Length: 181
Image (cartoon, rainbow, N blue to C red; front, top):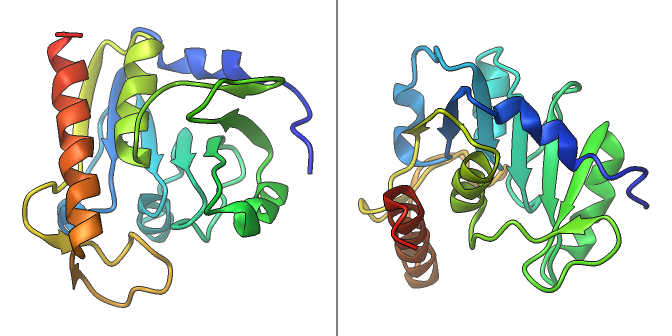
């Protein structure tokens, strides 16, 4: 598996556009219509959008929630020690940008972020989105949406670890959206 090209310039489709960022929270099914110019899905939210006939422009994923691969989407794939066994999935993707949380090398990029959802927000900001609208991002209910993982059949109570991950993601998003860096 190799990243063929450095496709980071593809993310310029965000520039000066209204962006919808879709998370896989339990409220994702409340989405009826998206009128933004660019749709970015966070990992498992891609599965829901696919069911609704919506192909995201960009998918931010660490590969643990996604099991559909819209053909024309740009994929920002975050590689880490816990998903090495899932890296084969990039073979189903046509446009892949590699992402890491450590010093980048080669064709890998350090965008920032802790979860797929907050990484999506950071990428939208880095590429100068005109507006950012968040959907399906529930940081406080203590419920994990059924689209978070392909094997979930229903919404589930969040584990202690998941609650803490969502708390950190919420803090990151609030901080970057306030531009109080």
